[in-house]
Amino acid sequence: NAGVTQTPKFQVLKTGQSMTLQCAQDMNHNSMYWYRQDPGMGLRLIYYSASEGTTDKGEVPNGYNVSRLNKREFSLRLESAAPSQTSVYFCASRGVRSHNEQFFGPGTRLTVL
Amino acid sequence: QKEVEQDPGPLSVPEGAIVSLNCTYSNSAFQYFMWYRQYSRKGPELLMYTYSSGNKEDGRFTAQVDKSSKYISLFIRDSQPSDSATYLCAMRPSGYSTLTFGKGTMLLVSP
Image 1 (cartoon, one colour):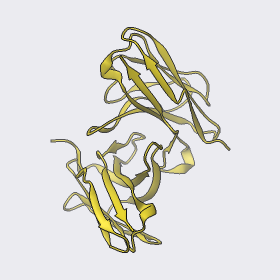
Image 2: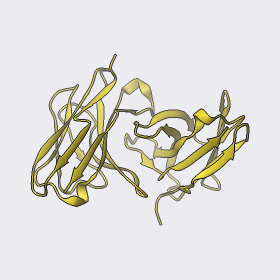
Image 3: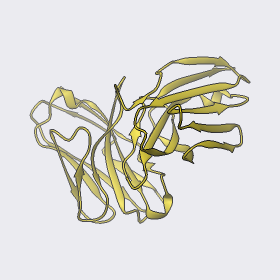
Image 4: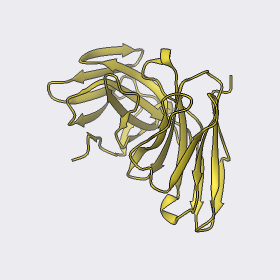
């Protein structure tokens, strides 16, 4: 099992450009999450999907959109990137039987110039 | 006031020391408490979780929850250089699927 995979690993964008961060899990988990991690700010939840077909806003959703494409895949889109969105983005998933354990991907390092 | 407070460190200790990492929280509805370990440039991984108050031990690691004080701790015995990482506390109320994280404490264990 690959667990949670994220692509790309690194990305540099110019202000105003758009891009989609991809996340996939092969653990048959129902719930998936997108976080951003910034120095001094910790992990902050952007959006989550409790199950296929549902999405909900987290703590910092502005400037982002998400799509739960199917049970395996959950993508995060930046429509018009801003320097404030420079961050490390983590995707995570959680299964019904895994209690509180969220499994995290390796992260995407995004720089917006 | 943030819901979860955690000293960012860094906390530097010599190999073999006992390490104490702590978080305080304000939401009395939190019932599930977790510690995640994050190595540099990696994703967080679950280290331990505890439900409600009490202690839980796993090898060199012990997690404690004191709900009356809204205070949780992670103790690491016989610390090793491989324990050098950032430790994040996380918690949630019963029935919720989302976690509230502390900002993380960076731990450095020197040989």
